[in-house]
Amino acid sequence: MGKADTITKQDLKDLQDSFSTHIQGFQKNIHGEIKGLRGEMKEMQAGLRGEMKEMQAGLRGEMKDLRKEMHENIDDVLGIVKTLAQDAHEQFLDIKTELSRNREDIRKILNHLDAIEKQSEIDSDERMVIGHQLDRLDRWVHELAEKIGYKLST
Image 1 (cartoon, rainbow, N blue to C red):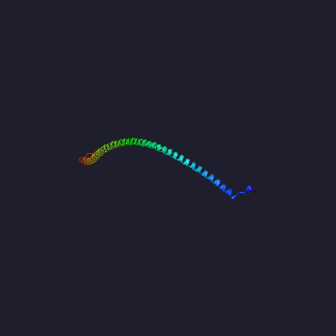
Image 2: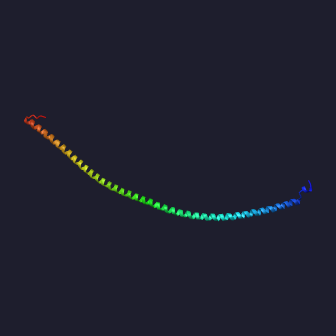
């Protein structure tokens, strides 16, 4: 190896200084790029915030419209339910009135049946009394016919 092939400490120091200078330049470039990217990111962030605020305002408006529509729909449903409830109440009252009339009719029928049953008992008692009277009358007629000597046929 000749003198030209030997690396000295000075050569290494010069190489180190040269690398150090290049690295510092590279670092400055990277820091500049990073600063630029940060600026771009801040601009993008501000833009996105603006877009998000616009979207939020739009969504709030849509939600307000939906709430209004929902309240209108609920009011419509409640109106229908109220009408159905009133109809059901009226039908219930009609049924209640009809039941009351039916109860009165049934009460009259039962009273009439009681009167018929009582009259039937009276008629039955009278027939029994009449039957006893006829038996007694038949016995008297037979006794009388026997006393006068008359033969009765059946």
